[in-house]
Image (cartoon, rainbow, N blue to C red; front, side, top):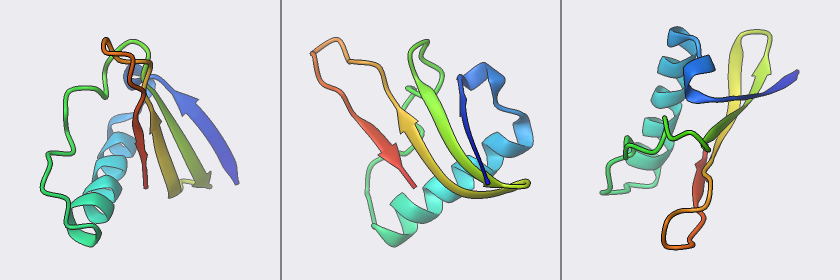
Length: 78
C-alpha cells in the first residue's frame, strides 16, 4: 500500500477521474448529499489530495483544504 499527497496539477488524469468517481459514489449516492461535489476548491493552491493506493487501485481518498477566507477549514474524504 502507498499513501500519496498531491496537488491538483500533480494528479494524473486517470487517477483524478477515479477520485471523482469515488467521491460521487460516496457523497452523492451513499450519503444522498444534495450539494455539488465539484465545488471549485480542488485546484486551489493550498488544497492537497491524499490517496491510499494498492498498486494502482484507489482504496481511499481525502481532500485537505487550506484555511478558507472566513477562517473555516473543511475537507472531505471518501
